[in-house]
Image 1 (cartoon, rainbow, N blue to C red):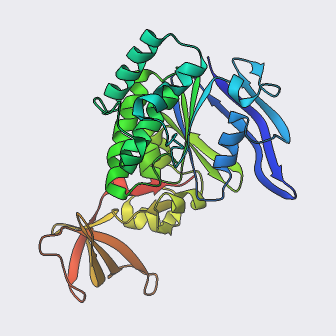
Image 2: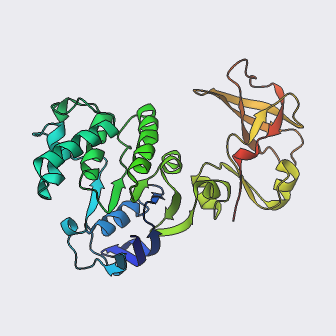
Image 3: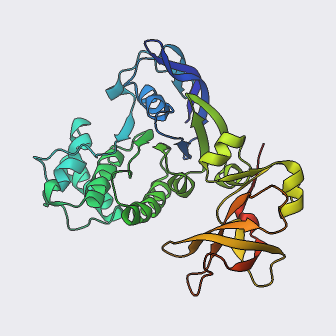
Length: 328
């Protein structure tokens, strides 16, 4: 079973929200739609769900055009940013909702609810009111509710974005495990590349209504399709091929993330520290390279938290190739 989107376009009056998009998702595969706010990724997901009218193109499941199929008959599960739980139902009642709609018998329904609550880490929460739960717990309930009827495709629209950073990171790991343990086929919309790379088997990068690159996470991270994609993925500095060869020993145009240059007493690059900012697990530096021919060009670098250099210090740097992306 698989989803296929061919030539899909969605317009809001004169504005093209989605333009001529092709995308396929195989059975059991998790694909992340990754892009900045306003790029059309949520509109694309809603069009797949049947919540947005399509101006052109086809959304099909196993080769069957879904154009005439209403939302509730597509067999897709939906999870949105705010979970959209039923406040008047307890946890078990929320999870069981779809099973009731499918007229699943009570005994089988109870078993399915118990199994899913254990799977999402909420065993023992059956009778809790959803209004008493934390944001992370509510999203776990929303995921269990969406998975309960065993949907053909799970559609998740920024499911973790309303949570704080630490909780979002933990829930992303839990969600990745959950999707794999249930064998779910899923399309996840997110603007967070860490989240996309944690969850997805493949990442589709979207910009201005179009998909500009599709690939496995490591491929997209290491070889972004163009400069704009590289910058979106954290490459603050882009070097032409000649400079890349001289500085980092790579042939071709490259993007440097903040981690590409690291303080290393044995490093071969000399630099002066201009600024420093303490982060959670490292110190971010702004440096000027002593032997760099571009007048006054500034680069980012990282240093360990223990005894970091100060502005004005001269340090030596080495290249960490995990922070170097070859563009195009």
